[in-house]
Image 1 (spheres, rainbow, N blue to C red):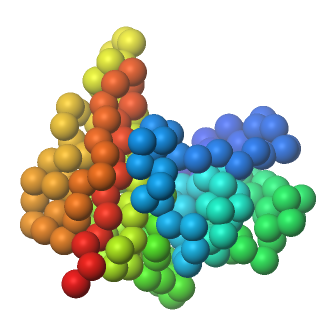
Image 2 (tube, one colour):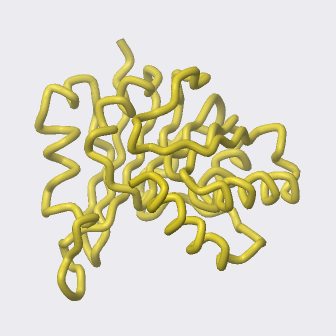
Length: 192
């Protein structure tokens, strides 16, 4: 499965524009002032790095992960062009195997943009620093035009995973939104 996933994402990213513009994670505008501007960030399934560049430009040191070597090469090139190479560390990694060992966490910001991997949710929370913010956006069946696929979350999935379970005991819900085929949740790890 990993080879198939890698090839599929390599094909998709091969056609992506060479110039990557920094972009905030979707639907976080109402809580942007709660998102850290210093420390360490983890961008999971970073693609071509728009959120990695955004976090680095805000002042964070970013560890970016993706299965596609083509995507990670584009992140490296984009960070270099933007003068952010010293703030962005990129790794090619199959996330179906979990997060890689040796990550430089804990992280003050963890971003997962349009990558649904419920098996990783406990790991993401474990890597979150005290006071750190976790942003997860996934495709959703809520408001999706057409038949939802296997990568679409069911209604309420993110809140059920992060808030309505023991996993959420140390998390403060900052924002949650489901509409137009996208679900986003923003959480903050409470200080001890």
